[in-house]
Picture 1: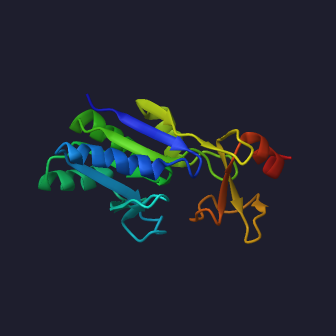
Picture 2: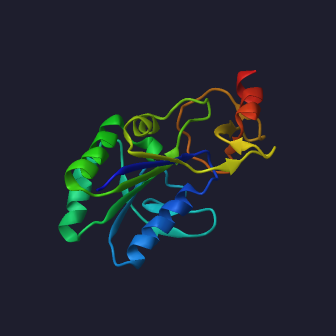
Length: 192
């Protein structure tokens, strides 16, 4: 029985690495996967998922207006799919999360989603909000703060490395723009 999974964490916990490993495991057993990523995240090139440890894969991109059932059905017309893996799933819309639930429930294909839970202000992303509500399985991937505690929040940094408290929810960046921290250090930087 297929299920909808949400693997979430702060940045630098290995979400993309875990996704690429899962896809590899399926393929190693002769099974086909469809790997997808948000078109907005082009840090490694459009249609690329790359891990900070150096592994990468081509991916089908999706944007906010795309119907994921149609994209997956199109891929199914070329080959049997055994699993759909979605990177940067925090950028999914509410409707797209519903579409992924449809893929699981009606097409009987497991869907594994990987992404951030909250933004730099501690607010849920829309995709994460609905995955937290509707996923069959929730899995937290862990990373650590500079103090050694579990990092479950993300700070956005300016060019001088200082935390930013306001701005648009989405600003694509990596270690130069974001730092994963525990709630205590997030509180000290943003809330206090």
